[in-house]
Image 1 (spheres, rainbow, N blue to C red):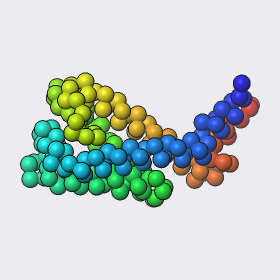
Image 2 (image 1 turned 90 degrees about the vertical axis):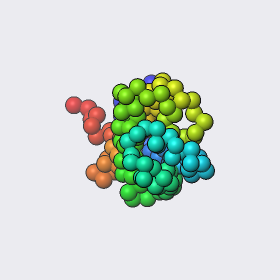
Image 3 (image 1 turned 120 degrees about the vertical axis):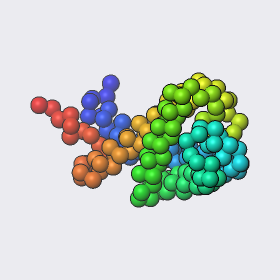
Image 4 (image 1 turned 180 degrees about the vertical axis):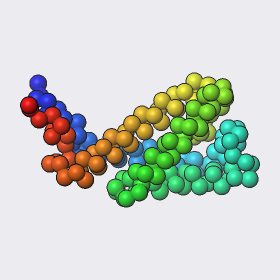
Length: 163
């Protein structure tokens, strides 16, 4: 069994930070690329939510996936501002999905492709998935904060010092 400090070092290791950052980046690169391959279908999904004026739908259908790809690429190489951009998009996605669930919309979430099942439960599943990605982003922020504090190996062991 690992001592408390060893477990904390394992949880907050540089490799966990990198792996989680790369996984989040791949999700955004993939999701944006799939939507860019069929912007008409994505525009149709956006329009079904009824949140944006019709004139803005085509711009959102091209701009949002482009931003997803760029932010994902930035996060993959740890470019400054990319995690902030992804976090803002995740908050936006969570708000829109929550609104869709509350409205009882029976539509595709538009998260990855136009072929996702258009079921009410799909919006709930997408909401849970986005909340998990938001938790991953929070972990990345915590890890970065720890590094800025100058803690050794960017781990949290200083919080668990023996009395």
